[in-house]
Length: 287
Image (tube, helix red, strand yellow):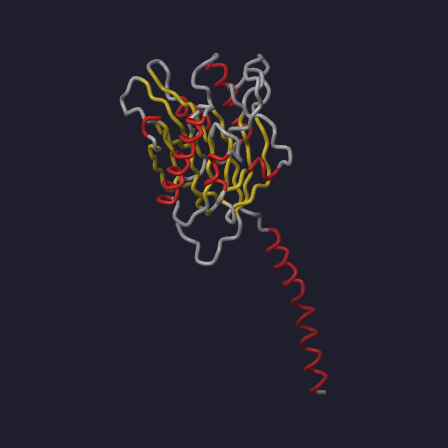
């Protein structure tokens, strides 16, 4: 009797509790992966019917509803409100505008980050060499409890050896800025790099960061320069993600067609990407 009871009890417990174990496993499996979406776009400042282009850009961004938007060639001047501020207001996003031009200047030109997520920190840094008038900006945002550092920049545009050397120096300074500000949180870097993702001047960046579009697509020869305006196809607008901390799940070119009135969003196409957060390494939590 005693031996039979001891054998029966584990079986009874398993029968009674098996459903609970299965429900728990299903619940664990159902927890969604944490991820974020991001768009980068060079605005081409206010050229070529900005009011019409602005409506097209906002309409598409509303549809995409990315967590973060990185903008380059953002301008404000007399009779033209800051373009990033205006777009942010249309979307209900917070924003950070970074310019080498001082506050109160009649014209300010630079980059911006917009987000629909809570902002945890924001910083800016002028990039060396200072006579090239380039800047980087950071927003640390909270994506469903996961802080992530998002940086935007726009590198030198010259296509000669001088431009390549300048971009290399700017990348080194950008990485110093990231090291000084990122802490232990994942890093995403977006913008107009004026060079291919595998270019030699981006070599230092390539060591720790993946090219989101190149990670998803085998054929990376597609252009982010508007082929109606430029003859040479080249992909120079990128979203780089910190390897080991993030995974690129989707990436695509956007604004590659004009709107219904034949207006292009910009002289660049945009890039949209979806990034998944990798599991946090031991001891990497906190903000």
